[in-house]
Length: 114
Image (tube, rainbow, N blue to C red; front, side, top):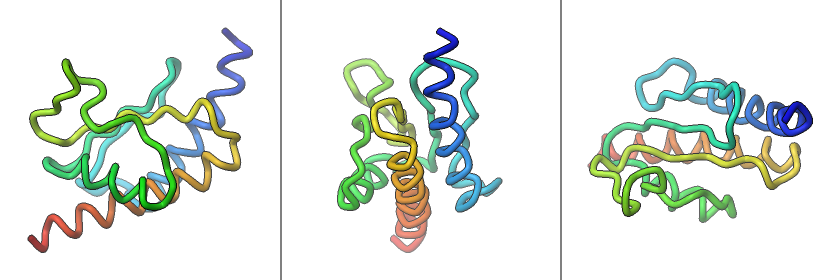
């Protein structure tokens, strides 16, 4: 498990750093740097998770489906994404994490203008 942590922790840290850079402590998203496991759970503004997934997909970023961590894949608030940065290389995770963070910002900005 120690070897597994050595592989995953830098990827978790890269996602955390990108989210911190673009979102910081704003109220549009909350997350924690995991101490183990395979996923980072991001809680977004209500109604934005599917739009973040759509925008990220347009950038070529593959995410688990919005609602993936809920029974039958249904997130009643459309507000949670589960990020699994285990497969791509660290460099790919760094690039994807920036795209994800910008997708979050854009989705939340669009939601305010609706």
